[in-house]
Image (tube, helix red, strand yellow):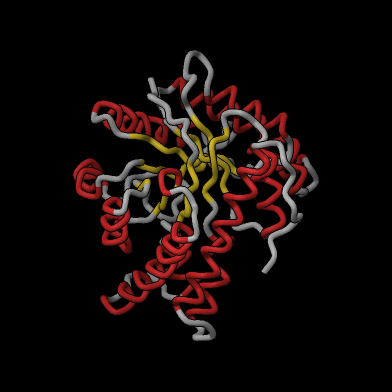
Length: 314
């Protein structure tokens, strides 16, 4: 059974690997040492952003980073030293089916990086390929068993991509899928994974438009005595307005303890830095501003105060 985690959790995730390598820099395949250093430098800019936000007063005990070992081992070490919550991914980037980045050697890598949370990103649609779902669940159960035996925390990012037949049924309307079908599928996925022995401490959840759906997800995450399990909302690379809506909706529901908003926090700033339109310091300041805004939006909504701004200002 999961231990759970229910303190506030404000995460800046930049564990993206394919998005940085190919999306930001346009590099395909295996990259060389110089390119690796360039990706690592871009991640350092994001890390400087959260450090700037902390200097501006964001509570350190609730602030967290999520970054990969490949490009961010030094950042993970520094953040742990600085008293930040750290998370590192265990999955191979960009696969439709969950598998371990380091194969059967995953435990050694987790021990070496020693994050507060071990995080997995999993695409799991209960109406999808049943054999694939079963294979994924078996790997994820093994990881769950290992983490809890070692007293480690397990963060589970659940993505429920639409099956072609589901989208077809909705006339190709992806918004209708997100609103009408995905919330119920997420609850089913959580139940199926729990029944398969997968016990996260924190569920990282795609944005939901309705408070009732957020409450249903919390009820699933906390069913059958899992009362301390927390949920956090992710940004899905959406625009600021949408992220603000999702944060405000989730924050008003007990059981949602925070967020993990990545690309919306850093992407524009990193592109401008890459193109040498702004300095690393300016990029970090922009990222700090965005991250601090998410904290303010979440805390205000949690306190029952509507956000003073409908959208994030630039």
